[in-house]
Image (cartoon, rainbow, N blue to C red; front, side, top):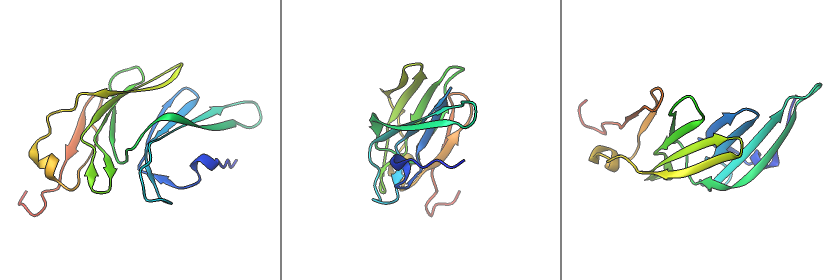
Length: 147
């Protein structure tokens, strides 16, 4: 079946998505229509009833201005660390947050950032991903330097 949500119809990419039980949370992202990264958080609730699913989408007030961030799970519960990302096209986000999903919803807190090496601070771009529970692989292009 097809479901259209006005909250998500403006085009969003490079967001973070986290799920627990019947809820999927979409955090941040790059808006294609306005070429911006507004502080956003949406909760998509999926109830599987007999017949067809019941879906609802809600915009929450505790969003973040972030895109292309790296997220890793920190254990068997629904706890995560968000590292990096971008606040603007040319402005990296040199911050970290913890995210916890529980029966009451989503909780986002600031986490002390690692000590960033100069190659990461001064690089125009970076890339990476989760390397398993609580570990992140982060790389920067050599930008003209030999590997």
